[in-house]
Image (cartoon, rainbow, N blue to C red; front, side, top):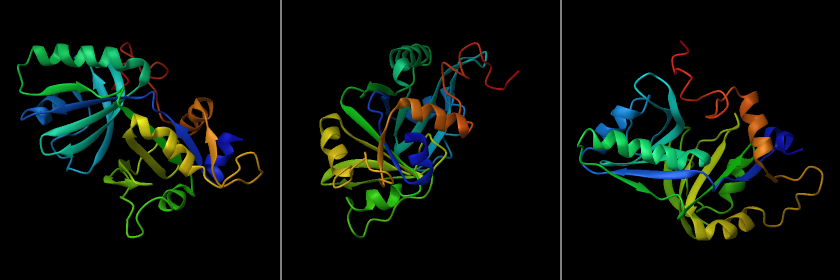
Length: 225
């Protein structure tokens, strides 16, 4: 039911267990370019890119989304079970390069909600400013959702259109309540349904999206060789 709701209408996921690591400083872009498989230098502020963190042999440390949040600042969203390992690996690589870049773990202070499906943007719009224009796919904007300052990106992990909302951890409960307001998820045909990680897994598999620990790992060369 959750899977079908995302495909037909909308599903709401609380994925606050995901990790958020910020790279900040004069050499933040240079450092990110070193460890990230996608292009960082050509990523303008306000853009999001998906890619892999790889060891020198090509094995995958994690698959992540990278947000270009400033001229000298980036945010990495990493898999929950991998936060400590990724942080340790980044610091190890950083120590050997001497680049002027701070690596900050913001995971505990940060929440993440994913509203996915054909009706996701219309549902989110009810809690956004009337003149707010949704960002293009793989872009983000800073805005207010129900009065809370958030980073709202046109991204997802389901194969559907939708948004992911990064916000202070203490505001997650309120945001969930507002997004579900006046909607009974037990009713057939409810516009939005709360969804769990089981549905997230089947949705991303159906959309051919890989996941660290399943299709990806340090023993898996990123080039498939």
